[in-house]
Length: 126
Image (tube, rainbow, N blue to C red; front, side):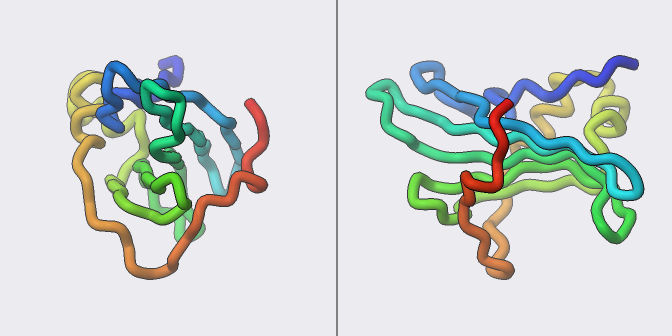
């Protein structure tokens, strides 16, 4: 099956009048495997509202996961959500890409540690 990333606007519940712009993505191969996407959300006036980091990966401990983190315009982590499986497995479990996107909409409280701030210098252009 051809990999189809999620519709990020659905996951982030981006308002219709806002614009979601991809800033870049990164892929990596074995033994750690995954891809990350970086997005900026702008309101109708063009002001930065939020930045997002979305990931689909096998982490350093060999655990599969996919999810996202939302940062406010100042770079503070304000929301996140993660599931313990890769994106393709979530699509199969939920029986559709749309249902998997809805499953990723849940919002969890930001993790208190480690405190991570947005670092645009770590993102390469797409």
